[in-house]
Image (cartoon, rainbow over all chains, first blue to last red; front, top):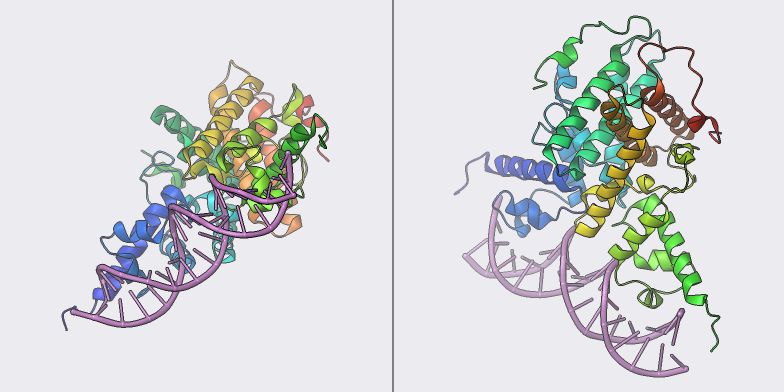
Length: 192
Length: 192
DNA sequence: GTCTATATTGGGATAGAC
DNA sequence: GTCTATCCCAATATAGAC
């Protein structure tokens, strides 16, 4: 028995990580199984020992990159948009919300509902938290999508900075106490 | 000569309109030439009498749907997001910013730069107009993208309403004169 | 200019050796 | 479990009749 016990689990994990990288960078359609397997030094044939289909891998990759713990907001738009920051389900390309394959479309749609809920929890419930959550979700997804198409690094940084600031405004600033509000701890960490 | 003089121009136009409809609804990859031609009651074969490739048609469709005249902002997010409103280049799916085909990617990226410039012109230049323009561009693109994945019509309307209001806020409200500001004429028309 | 029929490519998925 | 080789289908693009 030439393989250690956990070998299959490790290669499976390697496939998922390679897939996350490529799905974020290119989206579902533009990423081939060949690409994914080359990305972890294997061949096409080996893929189906681990997954039934590319769509199944996509769902799993979304789940895998779900942020853990409370300060998940730190990760959103941290680092330059479209850059090498940690993967979150929403940084998977907006490309895939309209995929032909229902499994893919549903996986993305579900992640969006989840994002909305989490954002909603950050807003003062006394106010119009739903509106703020929806608008900031749209801004976050849009920023990640646009960021991919921008070649100029300076412009990408401007975009990230602008959206970070404005999303923060939407989520926490009240119409009344606007101005000198301390940035919430959600945004204060690791925004370099 | 069984065809009138302008026959070719008219069918070409019909192809572009069918393509606009489908590119908006499904994106570039998920739309086949077959689909496009069926949409204007023709067959695959006829396509290449008008266009060299699907990518070329995409570029042309983007240009075709560029809003004309000054009150272009009326059209943005007018009607329910993801609905049947008039086509603008940015309502083409964010899908396509990461297309494998460089022509497609560039066409979308260029439209985005254009959107940014137009938004920038709407903001008071004395303030941080660049930040507001970038953030609202991201929100608009994100809203259009998310809207596609939402099945619930009520939620789609909420999304559209929220983003309309917040984008308007970003574009015109000053930190000082916030509150009772009259909606600008850009947004006052045809927002039903 | 538009049709039907076909060549060709890319990529998802399978078969069988090792 | 992973490999190579192959099947298969969808979709772009072309050829030639009308």
